[in-house]
Length: 220
Ligand SMILES: C[S@@+](CC[C@H](N)C(=O)[O-])C[C@H]1O[C@@H](n2cnc3c(N)ncnc32)[C@H](O)[C@@H]1O
Image 1 (tube, rainbow, N blue to C red):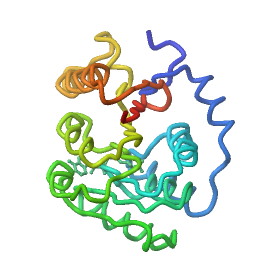
Image 2: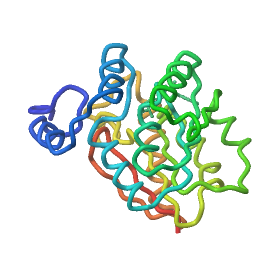
Image 3: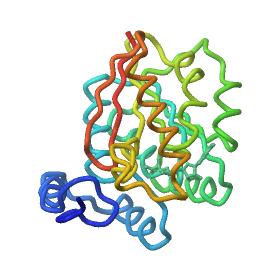
């Protein structure tokens, strides 16, 4: 099953290598953040996934983005730079949030990004819906996506896009053969989440096998 597939990746290694060769090389602060993430084991978006998000944001002309799961601010910075949108981003870990705040300053986008510290499940419940978001990027704890959903739906404008990252979860969502015992609950929750999106008449969803699997949902 896993022949030719690098550990943890859902695609053949040669495909990933080729996809990554087609993406503009990163330099400066962005490259430094990638190196920091690798060194400190911070799970930032895969290059091909964040590239996809950047292009999508340009097409969508996004002005307001909500991100759940900031980590060190890598995706928030790339999203802001891609389309100049205002980003509201939520992070549970103070250590991560401190690092993200430093990175927003270095990137010169402090006025564009609002970092909210706390559990996204509580934060999204508090956010007012008078100013809806054009795009919501869900990239926090994978077992909590369903809990975020009703509020994401409430906060997303009609015609807006919900992007859910890591939904194929190293391939485990797609086949029991890959499921490791300690991840069973997360895998079940991700399967339920994708089933719910499939059945949801208010959203049109496409599942893309890039990075760790991206669900792209258009709000009708
Ligand atoms: C995959 S990382 C985010 C990566 C980031 N979006 C990027 O691509 O640069 C997930 C982050 O979500 C945070 N997180 C997990 N559960 C959360 C929750 N319930 N509320 C807020 N943040 C959460 C983790 O602390 C972690 O930093």
